[in-house]
Length: 96
Image (cartoon, rainbow, N blue to C red):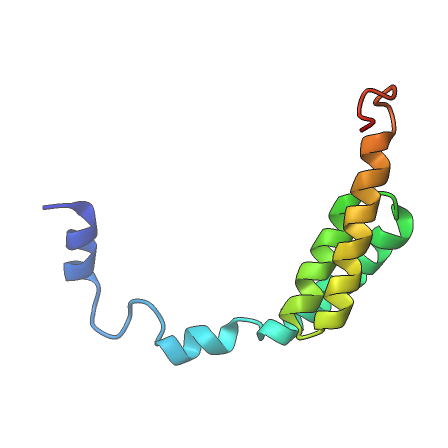
């Protein structure tokens, strides 16, 4: 018999995993998680505005929070930062 099956048989009823409502109550709400993510992302953007990743991740958080206009602005800035970085260090080989 597999170990998982033995464990299920040995565990008294009602003492296994918490009920779904209990598990859901223990998890942070999506808006709380998004709010917690915003502050570090704001700092990352301020510290490294020429990097793509902070703009991208802040756009993802803003979109998840329902801020579509802000997310679009951040994505446009991410693209601009990527274009600026791709032009750096290419030695002119990337010119069209």
